[in-house]
Image (cartoon, rainbow, N blue to C red; front, side, top):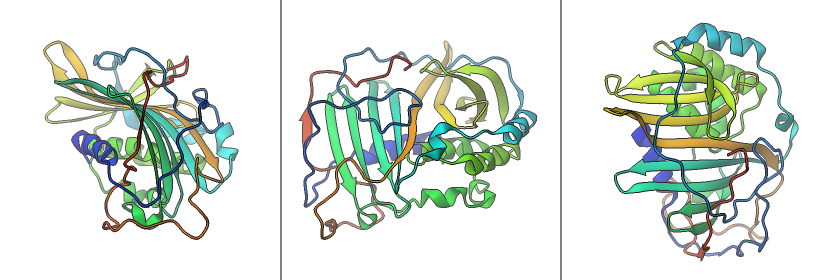
Length: 301
């Protein structure tokens, strides 16, 4: 998987298609939640200015292996590791940059091991709130939890793709302590990675940057990990230009928790299954709620 693949995957999830049951509209008041808070959040309209496309500034780095082995040896449990429920709940903020400007989205996702889930997303610049849910048969089956079953699954990709894959997994799944340890060990065993200390993400959190390069050094794939827990804090794919590194996509991971239910459950009796092949990405209901504001971002974002 390349940075372009990650961008394309995110774009595919935003495609609009009809389903046979339409969930209710968002409540008038929703909680945004704080960064790293274990409470289940919801995005809400909030006016703000999107950050520029300047790439992350990183300190000079060195071989990543000793840093990652040290991290793997001290990975600690987090408060949110103790949360329980059928669904892993994640919140992320994503910026995509191209010649036409910047698109950003504030997304909360519910994901279960059987691939059922739901999503609330506020997207700009069109200021749309997308409401979606899907059954196991209504979505492509990524089997995300299987990615952490053994190191063999993660070792099947090259260094830059591994960084991209771990970033994509963090958009859906909240790895526990043992799974974070596995990811750190796989990264440590991957040649060509560099480690950059004290790298700050857009939420102001300081972690260790792990970088891989592709396109003959012209594309940088940067993963920012919490130096204590090994949790993914942020990801950036950036291109080297005459003026420095410019972001193509920037991903900020804000919430990792669990819940017994999605934000809305379909009527008892089973979820309707759309008449589309099961390998398609989750599809959004053909209902959009238009808001005049921008997404609610915590004061740490």
